[in-house]
Amino acid sequence: MGWKLNKGDTLTFNFNKYESRFQSVVIGYVLNGKMVKGEKFKDLSGSYKIEANEPGGYYLYIMNASSDYVAFKEGNIII
Image 1 (cartoon, rainbow, N blue to C red):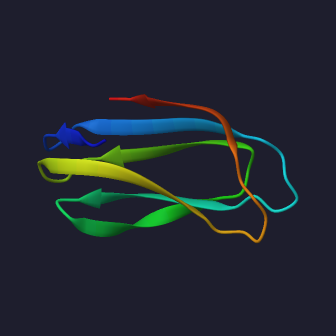
Image 2 (image 1 turned 90 degrees about the vertical axis):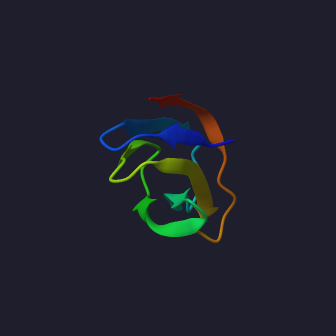
């Protein structure tokens, strides 16, 4: 699922993860079919924010960046 954003729009993903030994994730987005470098998060909770520099279809991605499983307790997206 993606979001159609106009220039200047913001999208914020707030999250909480379950505790594990190693718990790094990388959160980023895909814009009009191009993957944009994400940001690494190690803490149990955090917030990832996108400010649209150009109009288009924005899709979030989350990649596990650790050797352990990572699971999210909850998350919400605010546009």
